[in-house]
Amino acid sequence: MSGNQPGMDMAALGALAEPNRMQIVELLRDGPLTVGEIADRLGMRQPQASKHLKVLGDNGIVEARADANRRIYRLRPEPFRALDTWLGSFRRLMEERFDKLDDYLRELQEKERTEGPQ
Image (cartoon, rainbow, N blue to C red; front, side, top):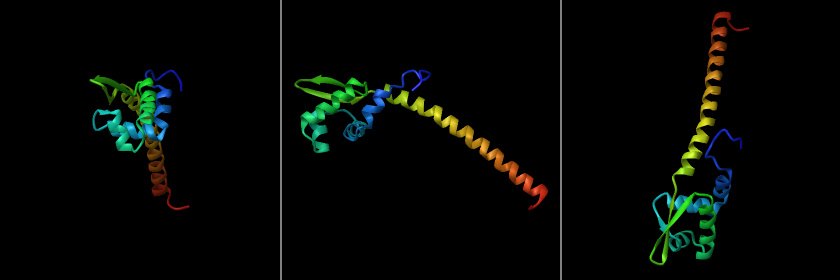
């Protein structure tokens, strides 16, 4: 990854690439959850859920707050904004290519209309 997209962290993408961590992120889209709730919903043991949450936390994807003896996890919006910005650069590139293809197809249609079938 080149340095022209500040904030786009390839390590965060790597953390999201693991299926269990992606499932945790999907769960947290609906709101904050405790480790126990995440483990129950995904059918995994709590230590396994904690391990995945640590990776997500280390990569800035989730953050935790203490509530008595529980830790409540929630998604951080910043990495998703950075990802959206990064993907937006590809969207613009693809739109430009489709516009050029559209122009080229119009030229071909016009040429066929004026010159007739070969």
